[in-house]
Amino acid sequence: MSNSKTELFQDLNVPKELRQPKQESVATTKVRMILDTFNGRLLELSFRPVVIPLRLVFSGTFMYPLLGVTYFISHPVLWSYLFSLILPQLMMTSLVYVIVFIAIYPLQAVFSFFFNGPIGLITAIFAVLQIGALISNWMVTWLILPVPLNMMFDAILTNEGLDEIVLRGKLRRIVRPSFPVRVRKAIWTLPIQILFPIWLYRSLLIVALNFIPVIGPILVVIIQAPSKGYKSHQRYFDLKGLDTRQINAVIRSKKGEYLGFGLVAGLLETVPFLSMFFIFSNMTGASLWAVSLENRIANEQYIGNTRALGKARGRALINAID
Image (cartoon, rainbow, N blue to C red):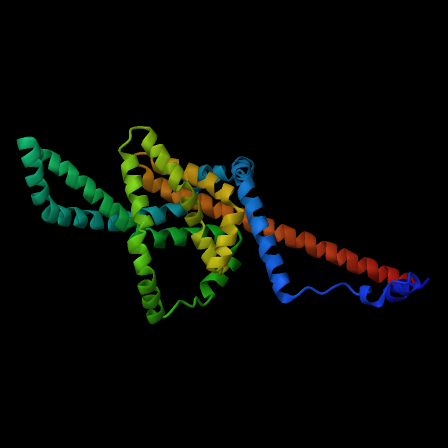
């Protein structure tokens, strides 16, 4: 009997129309692919309540914020990034408090005096101080913090022998959408943001939870933990040159890891008077996590290359013997 499939079919007297597999149409193939993707996604969602807690515990990423504390303390060269923030923060905070008192305190004092009497003039001061603290913290977080945090992240990677990644990331040309494209996108998404302001509901929920004693701040930490974990590696994603689709894929594959990191990091940042210190130590922990990921990738590539080289040498030896 011949080894070829055609001769085998002939020997078995298989009809000619059955010798070749039936070809599916393009539409059938697309439907099958969509169903496979849907089934895979459904299976992933069904196992998520089990997989995420397991990965949170066994991945050990919740230890990186604590490792960041010890690393930050044991490397005084990193302290300069924290100290460089003190003067700009004081200046911005002072300016915000002055503007808030001039703009808000008179109106707040009138309402407080109307409802609480003379003591309302004192309670209005505390209310304005809280508003000023919220505004100043927001401005410092979005306007001042990113630069020293990113510089410290790059310095830690360089100190751990990953200066090539830092250099490639800084030399990479980032192509951003043009101004007309950004304006068009903002106009297109504006009605959805007005009709469904999810960011506003989320902010109001977090503010409301903060007024609940003991349990409220813990719930806030849990709610913000995933996003805090993702944002801790934003600089790492930028250095690697990942686009939005690739970043989302990484986040989906490491939800448990980022949740564990975000929980511990969020709890540390709630410590009174030390929140700024822990912001820098958490970024230190995130950079150490990135170093671990890069070392793991390098080891896997080395093992793969070694196996491929071994197979090539084995084939060469067999050919030489033949």
